[in-house]
Length: 293
Image (tube, rainbow, N blue to C red; front, side, top):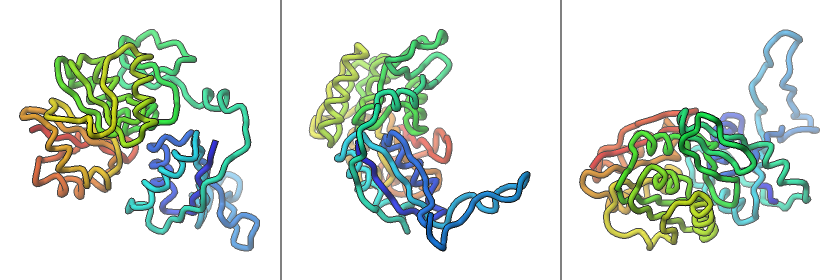
């Protein structure tokens, strides 16, 4: 296991923590960066009264990742984001071995997407109400169903069952969206990612769920698709606007996630030459943006 350590001002703790969860950190902890110094601040008040402040002036965020590459890629993705302004990467370090299997399993329960659609780790039984289930354990690639961006994409898929469609999952991570599309009847699914570990993870997870899809590097994506899904982050989504829109067939849909609510306008502007994006869902400060072609 490896931990990514970040120095974060008070007002950035929440958005950076949310982004780390979106990047599939196994855990995120917050510590006072000035602990055991004259600048240390106590966050407790008088008994029965609220604390004087919600957070420390400067915090150290410690995000735990399965591997060093994943931790360093998370740092590289965070640094260009506007919400990372004023923050600093302190480093990536190996952490001592523990019973990480038990620790990780204790943090992941079945996740409800809709009352009848659930993401269920293999060490749990599906809920009685579950008619559609994706079996998925936390691993090297982003996407376990616990983050709002993933849940919103899966809710969209469940509500727009892509039966008979050709679907592209761009930046597939664990393959959870591609698997969801296949579960809801897609005729063919291409799942692509720049990370070869993600490609392998997608293939493994698809086989474990008994669905057929084609996983590969981005050059596997070809032609037009009825639905194009991309759950990444705002900055790469803006860069990818012409490419993603070029893959959407007439009458098709573009579905984008990994976007903070306050980034909606800049995404609309980036995609304006190609389509008219709208906010279709919102959860915990994150939004789902879609466009019909």
